[in-house]
Image (cartoon, rainbow, N blue to C red; front, side, top):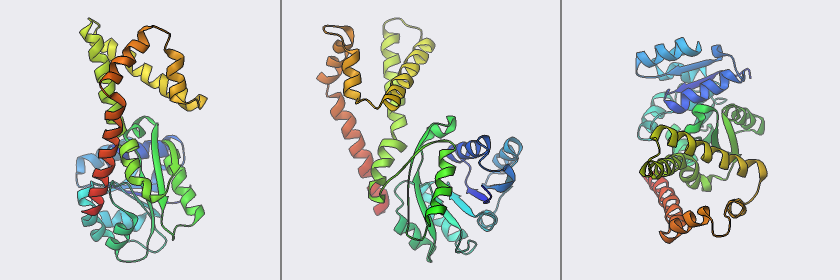
Length: 269
């Protein structure tokens, strides 16, 4: 990739994206520039990845062919107001913000822009992100492919309609936290029965990883895979019975519904 890539903000997701891009040799470190308000963060990221850094967001905006906005949602429009006169008509803007629609970002820039809305998630840190992307009408297919290549460098991607992005926020952006909660609960159950906690976390985490990998690689329905583990009168069906008595699936579905609605409310604000 010959384009210059700029990151405004260098939190966990931006760091993971930079690692993915450089490790996969998608781009040279010298084609990356990162801005942040904290000099110590910039010094660390420059030393670690050999990328350009800047304290001034406008400097990154002028540098970038593809500009990735990786700032907190509540600071989004303030940053856009700061940089909107520093980008040109060919710059591809990539948004990572939850609850910020294409239309609201276009209005904030106050001019025609090429915009890709995305929602990656925290497993980008280990190269296993699940990212969803959509774009506005000004982004050409070959330009969108460039952005897809960036996100493929640190995980898997899905192209979705923008109307589904609030659901994506819940099932992809937020779901790792639900999985962590589940892992912690499973480990707590083991500890209750006298199992060492460090070993419990390792064993449960590997079980979750392996189970997810089977779903992805076999394409089998999760219900079918569950049935294959449940022997008649066995320990697994007993454990599932305990969860179903408490409405386990209903509570999980409700959590996704509430996460989706929260994302919609952010957009309304």
